[in-house]
Image 1 (spheres, rainbow, N blue to C red):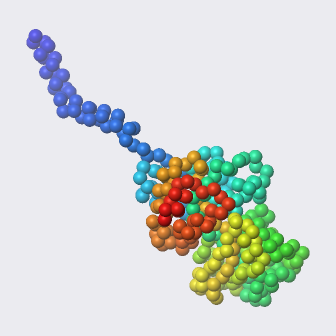
Image 2: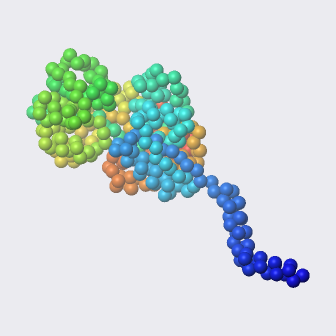
Length: 333
């Protein structure tokens, strides 16, 4: 009996009662966590670091992580729109920022997606995030006062296959022009500023810039190289926009750049927030709600992020299936 009592007292000494209570508490906690936690990750695809798409995706993920309960957003930079859409279609991404032109090409099997044996029917639109204007820049000593005056001048089209190259040939096609209608068509890339140097030296009288506004490098180009923004409020361009839902009429307000004289009308694409049809409806609803409630905050981060409104979102999804979560939010607000 003395031995048994001694052993019991020793066990109480080495492992007191309060430690039993802690172990029981921890055990209950471990069991309860999987039952109560509903948090899951979503992967947001953007373009490469340094792009405005990457910058916007970082802001969007931050809003989601701070304001959408039980959802964690992880930004995943990709090479471009083709990679974003293909990974979104295959399930490697949950949501993605995609240019409207690439989105329409993927759905309609045109452009870069013409020969890809991939079905993108599970891609759904959520909302537009920002405009990407195609901006025509001309030298103010070139005598170009309208889009019609561009014919016969020296224009840089950019490197073949680039966004600038596609934009220039979209304008030429709309105007029913060809390279023969210009005294020179350059294929200078932006590498080492070859395109802007040619413009500044007067070798090229016109060039195209594609990107959000305002842009510091463009502001410097306009100031130091006798450049000005060309108004493209043209009947042929208006027809192009009306016949192609991937393009939008865009206005650059007076004062966007110090040297700008009045409002400039142009056209371009929109970067759309897209998702797989498999993404949970309630999660999409909450994401659109966060964007809507933080419109002022987005504008304060960058003026280009001023596009979203419920009305704009409704009009921006023409020809694209809307995700049920986005449709439910937009119809109720």
